[in-house]
Length: 436
Image (cartoon, rainbow, N blue to C red):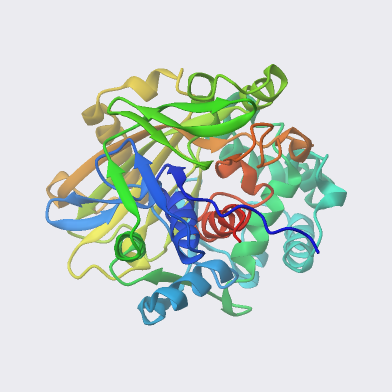
């Protein structure tokens, strides 16, 4: 009979985003002792809320699709499944100075800015993409090549190139088709009907899930140490032994690290050079995510893609058209860009002024008096650049250092960043820690 594996006495989790919190929760359910370290003063990572002049809202917007099964499972386990709410939503497209409806067959087939042949080809492309189940055949193809091959140059140049350029800049022509396909599929399958998109939100926002996870972790005996970044993962004889913070050393039999891979060079110096090179080869784009609380609505849509040569954002998200916020109308304006881009270092007021002028282009009725509050959040490692063949670049989650697992949001590929994928990875990483 095979001997039982050793019971892990203590596990350290680094990072309290949705993945780290989920890992800690599932580790505790399996009987492990858990200490979770977070550099920020609050848990939640990109899912955390902040106070926007009396309104609790996310720094970085989140929504739920009907395919997000891991989120639903976790919410059932936590006893908060009733907090999941669904609402019909819509898309818009702002181009040539006009706001068009978007995201349904009629809107596409009546869109006047591309030819009828292009509309028909695009319709077929969307239909096939929503029903495709496998991504390996397009994993080594670029999105530009894939979309152009199906839809033609006119569709790519008019509808996709501006979005890629303003999200990925110098990497715009080299984004994996598989990565784009998963985004099309996820949204396309979250519908009430062919004509009606339907997205979900958690009552109280993502903070509801963060709060419940943290309270369950504490209830089960876990420890959450906020404002205490891990400066080094310790190991000896090829095995992880613990972590070091400014407060001292914490011993551990296993470590789960969920921080962005660009932070690993100094944190895990014992990793082999080829592993460190693999992590360092993964490029990230930063984000300045602006949030406005307004007195009136900008559009009736949840999101609006923008294709205007003199507007330097790919779109806006009117979050209050998904999650009702009373008299408040909350709009997110994401500026994705390399952190070396001059705008990443602009003063917040300069960014906010420019972004609001764009909102006024979409809705000329808006005035400065409509701004009740605003905020800017910046993140250096917001979006991994997933080029064709990206799957081969991702190192295994289990590292050569026994007991150390490492993953960040780029490991979700071809899926995009999202709470559901974070929950899945957290659960799977916890399950790899052996129990008797």
